[in-house]
Image 1 (cartoon, helix red, strand yellow):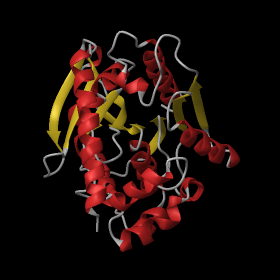
Image 2 (cartoon, one colour; image 1 turned 45 degrees about the vertical axis):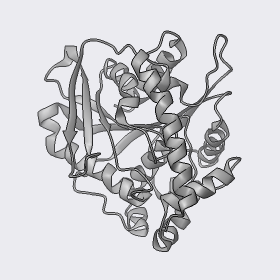
Image 3 (cartoon, helix red, strand yellow; image 1 turned 90 degrees about the vertical axis):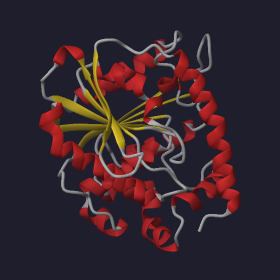
Length: 305
């Protein structure tokens, strides 16, 4: 069960961050010549909706796919927060599937994983209709969505992990070729933000059964090894309050000789490059660093097409 104290904390954070997102979204300038299909249902819940963005010059082509799940601590946020960045990615030759998912504390992290699998099943069933090359699928997430991405990859790529977490990997038979994490959280417990994480943990895993199931794979080293994770691109900055999480996960990947790339941008010269700057600034005037990140991610995924 989730305590009232935790619910109040999540509600307060949600209202605060929603106000900031609303102001930024009104100022965004989105790229032109993008073919869009919006609010397509992939399930029965009101949040089971996704958008598809394609380069307007590639109508009818089968394109490699980038699946995006928005950040927001897994308890707030919306696909429109990453739409501008995703439209820019689409112009680099990708079809983008930008999906909402149900949020904690109304559902658990396990439920969110089942939503993510439902999106993949939807993609597999409708790939011809929307020109999605499901043999070339990549995944991107910012902040806490990096955890959704990594656990999803592990469930898809490893029957051992899927069985331990008691999650059906779905019927789409899709494997993820590479992943990208922006200002990633990369952990559910501990770290320099361990106090805040202890509150969130209660919401992510509200039942004892879920905590027991997930406990072995709260160890990111074990998840990486058992889960057969794909190559990973990670982006953070010196002014990102979660930068230590990226560096810690990079050390794990290096220790295991895993295929990865990590970029840590220095402090901005004319403005701070804070948490999630590469998502929030893509459509704003001071977006040079954010656009460079888009190019880097497209280039990294292009290596594995």
